[in-house]
Amino acid sequence: MVHSFIMVKTAAGESERLVDAIRDLGQIAEAHIVAGNWDIIAELDTEEVYDVLKTSSSDIQGLKGVDDAKTYISLDD
Image (cartoon, rainbow, N blue to C red; front, side, top):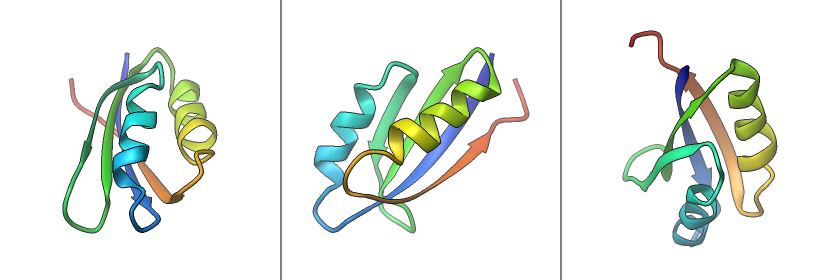
């Protein structure tokens, strides 16, 4: 199991709409609007690292209103 976090920066006023769209993605365990350098933090569990890449680069970054995303893979259990 690969556990990871995706930090998402959204266009102005898009966070509420996008957090719902991100939550609807199959691999996402949780997603929250947060204060700070990023607008949304999504947590996901996948079988393989390739699935993390697909979720981040295709599914999330492909959503209209997403300006940037960074992915962090957990190294502990």
